[in-house]
Figure 1 (spheres, rainbow, N blue to C red):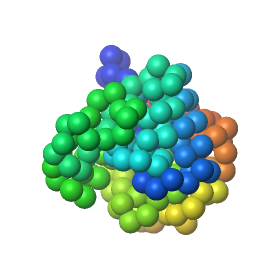
Figure 2: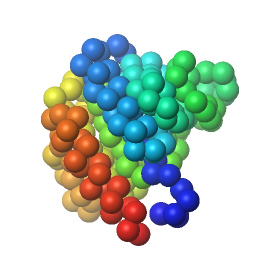
Figure 3: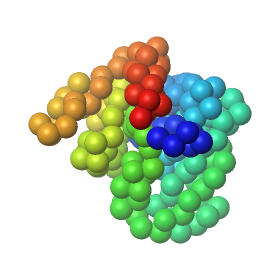
Figure 4: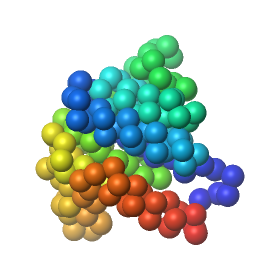
Length: 172
């Protein structure tokens, strides 16, 4: 990682309102902001909006990589929006833009992002105590060529794991 580039954390998950998932996502965004990292997500509601709000409320930068072509799209807490106009293919851009990916809940879009992140060799952390694909894939090796998805159950577990990943990136 270049010395002048900030660590980039991608948050993926549900676009629907889920109190537990949104609370987790908010805390992830807040932690990323306090670390001086850049937070990226798909710019929709739910987990994406909650993580952006966590970053925003703590002085951080939240970038939304949108699947539409509307530069004014995305949630209200996005600092920067990147409209791709490429629909679901945006998921590839999203995970490639991050140094690590964290999944909270999620449906088919999250499933595709987890699979893409694993294939691209990105470390993936998944909350095992949320609804959706993050819980189903936490701790699983979905491809024997790559590391398993890292399972966490709390924001403290997440912080410990993401700091390990960050420290490995700093030393490169």
